[in-house]
Image 1 (spheres, rainbow, N blue to C red):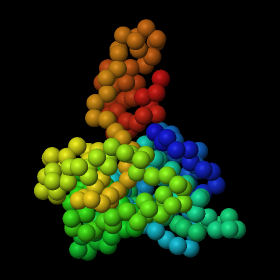
Image 2 (cartoon, rainbow, N blue to C red):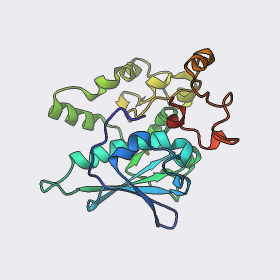
Image 3 (spheres, helix red, strand yellow):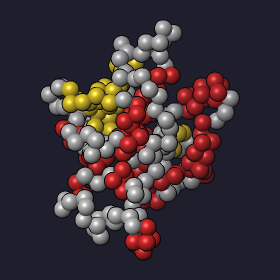
Image 4 (cartoon, one colour):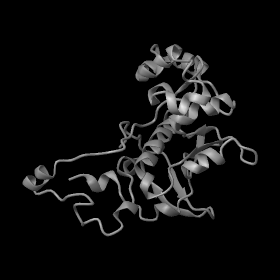
Length: 242
């Protein structure tokens, strides 16, 4: 799923809820991270990425095998962040603790009483305006300005449609954000950007069964049966590939 190639050489270790190592990963594992190759994934509660002295915490709703693909994307981004920010002697400056949970955790247990704010949070685009209104996430304009100064191009041009939200501020207020704004407009609140996109997804996928028959390809469920009776528990893009 990842469109960015993970840079090799960064330590990635998966831990369970008792802080015991479940397994280790390499950069080569991330593009096809799935339950077939890592069947113990459902017991993983967090990952340590990097070996630096500065610890950052990221929280995500990427718990378990069903979220393996997007977890691999998130770890790719963090992996490369660790690599490009290494010290002059090539040692890691940062360690990122990537906590994996559910979408309910992202609503109930992020920046709420009794739960501290992480340094990084992966949330749905429909949640950005509400978090911004509650002042639990930071507006990113200064970081975009710094990026532009260093790299001589606007990072926001990479997702330029989001910037159209500046023309739709009235409909993107918190009380309307979830229902009234297209998702591409939901990374801003008033005139400030609070998030950057990580992935895109789909809710429905069609395929041509006749083409599969002619080419002798195995059908995915529910037409095919090779994935087992409870295929929905271990579904992933790797299995779907012919």
